[in-house]
Length: 445
Image (cartoon, rainbow, N blue to C red; front, side, top):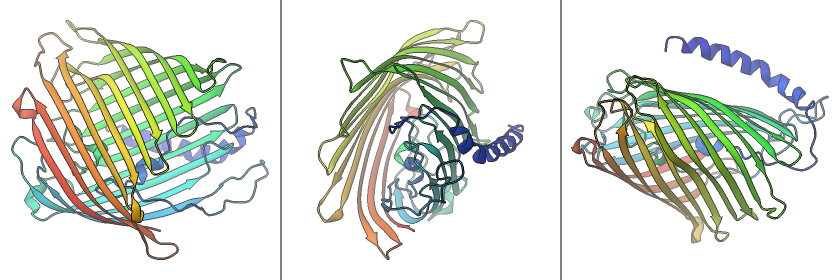
């Protein structure tokens, strides 16, 4: 870990150097007169979660104009937008430690987010995004925080270029996870409320070929737990390469083959290498329905005497459906294999599904509901390790929101939310049940 600041400084230097160069480079790649959908996720999806309840503010439809066209032939900062979001929340948490013996408490959470965005990855040219999301948690009884840092920080940024037939994107993010967060996406069954520093770097891109697209990505992730949490650091490196084509007999579908490979290196665990060839396909029926799937077979080896190599069927997929103009559904499902942070010499096979439903109600109210379930079966990766642990993790989330209009430039939202999390395990030490209820007020400038 002592080498990371040096790595960070060098990386930022290179990134700052590349920003003015990328627009010029994009002129050198081949042009495509049509709009190209790169399939990469937008960074704003996570940045807009500026509140403890995880709700999102609706962004204004218009953005500030960009700079004039440069000599290179396109806008250097198209549709430059800058948003500030502030929020305050009151929360009642029935199990602040997520442990078998519940300890309830009331918490006030204060959030501040800043988002800067320029350009659109679907349009030809360069695009950038940078955001910060910070929160401070104040417990009504200071002893209830159990020594956790009250401040949480999330920084993320991306820089990319769409040259028509060639597209590149670099994503970088840092999360100071202080163990207080209660958002749906941050509730973690195994590590629960353990505090950590999380780093992620991902470089991805695609190239249009004669009969299809060649896509690649590579990245590095590090989770550095705080001393005293009882967890060791975990890092992952990966590469992913695939070729996707659209059959002439199915113009709305894409099919292809891919391979994902990499390594998992956790403290207390032997290093693991994996290779996963997979079949991938997608289907888009207009703008209302889209399906994406990947089905693979993973070969995982462990670098230790007497280790047990494993072979597993893995998959992931999603179905998005806009049933009406006011109702939408998103279904996600997966099966993967990961080393355990808790049990030395063991991995877990995780199979899960989640469903999100978004409903626009009369009177400008909006209801977002989510349900999820995950089964985790642990198995020995090294000789002599066998706990036979089996977890079933169920979750429910409900959030009712209503917009606020303060002035022409200042918008906002109020929300009430409820989360329920329950982990049932055949080992009592890993069980917990938790209810979270709260109210939140947010402002967007």
